[in-house]
Image 1: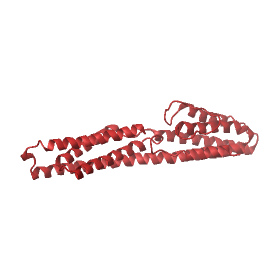
Image 2: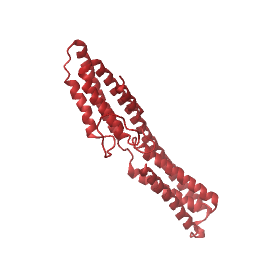
Image 3: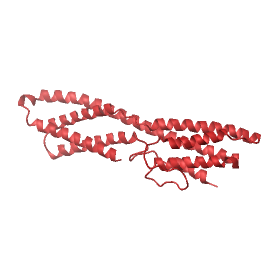
Image 4: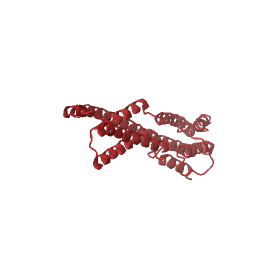
Length: 264
């Protein structure tokens, strides 16, 4: 959130500074630079730049929002896989209780580590002080331990044999879902493109200041426009980090899975 707030402030100051520079240059232009033909030409060029910048801005916002929605959908699917895995471990019986305990530790630790500003689950599970995002080796090791324990089960009858085969398929599916989830959690913004777009916006706002008259309505409209543009860039940055910032993927799916594991 602090990173996003700083980004908004930088963009806001940049755009207002560009407008202020344009207003400063307005008074220093000669009469031959203020003709209607010159003004019309500058407006035409800037309108093309505005269209191009708006297109890039909308594409970036659409891309990060799509990635955010994909992460949220995969998170819910992953939570469902873990919930189904626990159901079949219950059906296996007492021999699978240690595996269920390890699975419970994984889910609780994942919640506490990924949503640090929310209430941490109760119980005994690994707790981590440093922040590394969604991918942590110790969490992956817990899920791999579940996988190894499932493959070591020695079913005594035909029912548990079929159940063991199903459990092996389900843990493989859960591991695959986790890999996809981690792939989606990485940043996708092209920062060189973002910097280029901010430079284009600075040029546009500089021309706004250059061509606009000096009165309170113009100042207010430029400030409002700068706030809106900075807010759009803030949304792009925030959606690009699904587990950080103001807009984040909710933890309710994993918490529901944890409550089902804890249910008697």
